[in-house]
Amino acid sequence: MPAQPYQNHLLIIEDDNGRKEFALGEPVYSIGRDPSSDIRLYSQFVSRRHATLVLRERQDGHYYYRIVDGNLKGKHSSNGLLINGRKCQSHDLEDEDEIIFGPQVSAKYYLLKRDVVPTGPPPDEFDITLISPNMMFENPEESSQGN
Image (tube, rainbow, N blue to C red; front, top):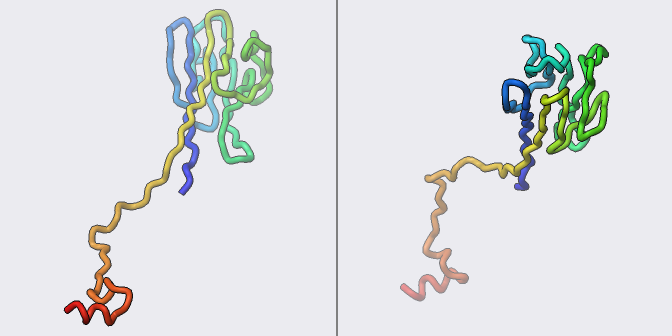
């Protein structure tokens, strides 16, 4: 059986409180200074609802995250997003993309891939094939000649 790709999405945030890692798996994440944010940023330079991560599916069945400036209702953050040095309203994240939310507040996105080889159930220890002595020879008459 061919190996199936397995993906883990990881976001590493650096802000005024240090460095935090977030393993992503939910369909939507709110990012910002607001205490109710799924991913909270600690800095006076970021908006309360600075960005949103949305899980999307590609045509090949793989998943990725899109980051959107502000919330999903269209309200943008005050400072916007810089992704890999370019100002963006939204961006489909790729492995090692760098996101700047404000001075000294950044994130790095990682897409970790590995192949998972499906394994079947362990072999049945009682699955045996019985062999007749006559099956040892191509011609059944040869078995009677040797005995």
